[in-house]
Image 1 (cartoon, rainbow, N blue to C red):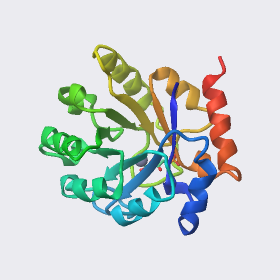
Image 2 (cartoon, protein in one colour; image 1 turned 180 degrees about the vertical axis):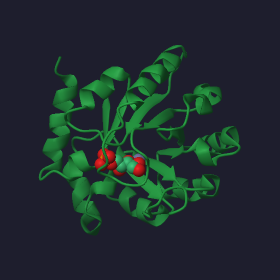
Image 3 (cartoon, rainbow, N blue to C red; image 1 turned 30 degrees about the horizontal axis):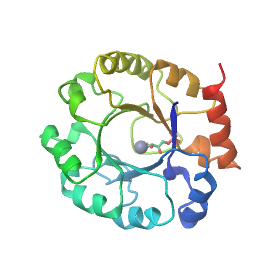
Amino acid sequence: MVKIAPSVLSADFAALGEEIAKIEPVADLLHVDVMDGHFVPNLTIGPVVVEAIRKRTRLPLDVHLMIQHPDRFIGPFAKAGAAHLTVHPEVCPQLQRTIQQIREAGLRAGVALNPSTSLHAVEHVLDQVDLILLMSVNPGFGGQSFIPSVLKKIVEMRRWLDRLPAPPELEVDGGITLENCREVARAGATILVAGSAIFGEADPREAVAAMRQRLTCP
Ligand code: DX5
Ligand code: ZN
């Protein structure tokens, strides 16, 4: 079953606890976007907020680091209660070491690729990670449109992963909507991140339920 990970980036940050409570019963994971104003042109949150979120939900926290020097923050996010920690190889000169450090901290390790980054950037670590995240927008903001050419990358990555004895999850992040979720899942994604398509709706719980129905009906 494809998992749905609502992204808090599109939630009301002044009422984060209430927003999370709306989707808690129907979501599989909670996606948390961490941005530093360097790797991406936006600033969001850090370990303090992740720790506060942790206390308000039992959903596993899927923390997506869009920051330079992510290795400096593995300890703080582990302590804050992240379940998955995903880093971008575009800013990890020693990717294997970073992955190893995430796992040693007791977290599941993910690697995320920008739309313009080749799949080959992670080919050598596929058997060492728990999650591959393919960005389907350029990271930095919620509410952007899905970049159609990423579908081919998803299909190709699915092919690579299916050759492994224990394939990692294949997560797709950016521009996922009720309209395109099935196509993305069919291409081979196992986790769909959705921000504006869930928290931008009047009833976020209903939005998750509608997406799940779209994903499960034949
Ligand atoms: C973008 C973030 C995404 C974002 C997705 O940089 O990584 O997780 O929250 O938002 P939507 O679903 O609105 O594109
Ligand atoms: Zn994200």
